[in-house]
Image (cartoon, rainbow, N blue to C red; front, side, top):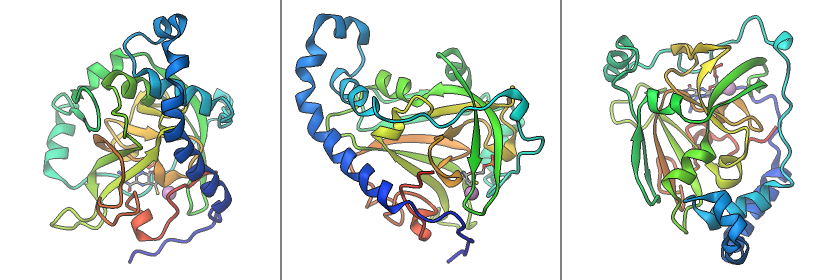
Length: 264
Ligand SMILES: Nc1nc2c(c(=O)[nH]1)N[C@H]1C(S)=C(S)[C@@H](COP(=O)(O)O)O[C@H]1N2
Ligand SMILES: [Mo]
């Protein structure tokens, strides 16, 4: 097993709270129907998945935002960590053509599976945020991220009623395994997936994402530790459970002993 030095202690109490909230969210979905059937609510939501959206709005009303910073706070150097160039020749071929052939696959428990090009993603409504990234190895850096809110994409593909987690699959195999067992992946519950600061970022500090930082697209989930912020996104899969995926713990580092709920 790969050893990393854990400096930030695992927030086990918040982990328990979040687990409880996720279950509560499932229960709430049924009860939200009445609210989401109200006419003004319907016009607000358009074709979005109403029950899920309603449940998320209620749950998130008590969810704090991660602190946002100013331009002057940007770190002069933002360390690149973990993979800095995926070895997969298919990835490198896409990088050579500016990722024009790259597509983000979105599937699993969704009403409308789809795939999006980088141009598609740049055309959607964007959010920019300046936040601090905290790695368990004990370093932090402040960066500016621009991308599309994950919640917006999830609402447009429509979550199935049994959707519980969002799994992110990446292009890099950290172990260099031949069988794909070291492929980086991560997962979030719906609370973090629909959090307003959870974005799929294509730009960092006003520039297209560098390869070292996860080009062409990475997850930014600002209330969780660095390793939850999956780089080199290839696929998003909506699931009801993740215990049958890879090592069963919901992420590459989780499978190697780290907390799944890596709240800061
Ligand atoms: N696909 C992928 N995502 C990843 C990693 C990785 O090795 N591969 N490392 C994680 C860790 S531990 C950290 S701290 C951040 C580092 O992001 P950065 O390279 O932009 O600093 O990415 C996270 N996401
Ligand atoms: Mo990290």
